[in-house]
Image (cartoon, rainbow, N blue to C red; front, side):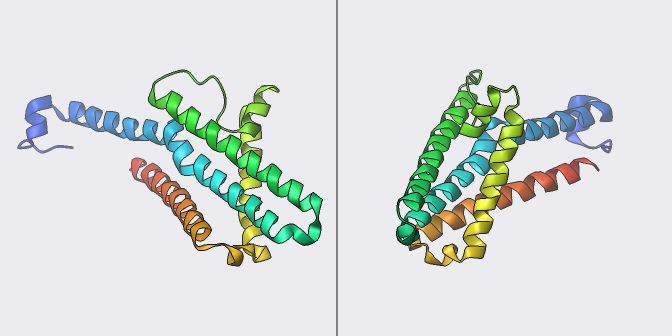
Length: 175
């Protein structure tokens, strides 16, 4: 509620209009959190960084595994690069207010063929989180170069802070 001396009350006329304006602002924030640009920047790109660093780590440590580990490393790097291009293009389509002609990542795009892109996107998320766990629990995280460490920390910070901001916003909206 707004008190009678509020400038908003004078402009809007009553408290219902004031609350309506706040709800519109609130909905605009909620829509921003759901925009492909925001999601790609805070989830997609960090996941691409994790995949890329994982692939590089496999190549670096996989000399004992021979050609199989080398092939796996390169396959993961190619997957990361493809997803990075798709996330970037997906974001650009959103910023230009164009309809999306494809999904944000390779697995979600594959899921489109089965009319289940969100299931495959969830699979991509599971694989990305698995990569994070493998990097941590295998000790590969300790072998990263300073640049890789910086990228890993930036991706983690962006991903976790955005998740917490969105969660906090949802909880604040309940009141």
